[in-house]
Length: 192
Image 1 (cartoon, rainbow, N blue to C red):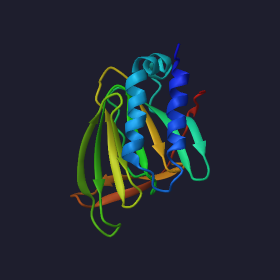
Image 2: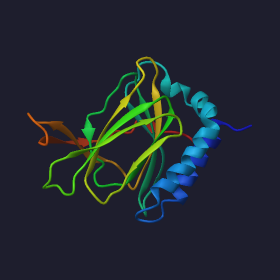
Image 3: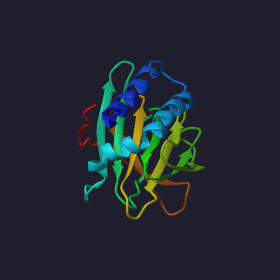
Image 4: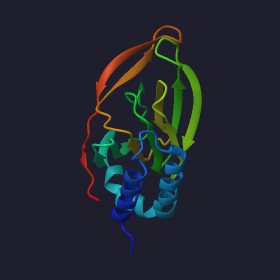
C-alpha cells in the first residue's frame, strides 16, 4: 500500500534527479511531478492533513535540500484566503504545484531592474497543476489560496535555498514599487 511518505519520496527523488543542470527543463519536471500528484492526490491529502488543521498560519516545510547544484524542495501550507505579498525569488528558478486546494498566482516580469514591472498574467492551480519561472530575468508574483474554508498545500522546487528574498508594494501608481528585504522561515522538516 502506497503511503503519503512514498509519494513525498517520489516527488523528492524526481525533483533532485532532474535538477542537476543549472537551468533544468522546468516544463518536463513540472509534468513529471504533476503526474505523481494526480496519481497520489488522495494519499497526499490524507497524509498531510495535519498541515491543514487548526489555525497554524502560513508555513514552509522542508522536504529536501541539496547543495551542489543547489535545489530545495518544500511543502507550503496556505490558510483559508491567505495572500502573500508580491515577492521575488532572489534570482532562483522555481516550480510551484498544488497538492491540495487551489491557488491563484499573479505574476510580473521586467527585462532588467531598470525597467518597470509588467503584469505577465494569472494562473489558477488545482492539484497537480504547476507554474514555473526561470532565473534569467527579474520575476515576482503574488499567490492566494482561493478557498475561504480550506487550507491549501503546495509543493515548491527551487534552484537553491530561498533564504532571503524581497517583497514589493506599489507606490502611488504602478509601475513603481517599494522593495522590502525578507528572510524565509522554515517550520521544520517533513519526514520522507
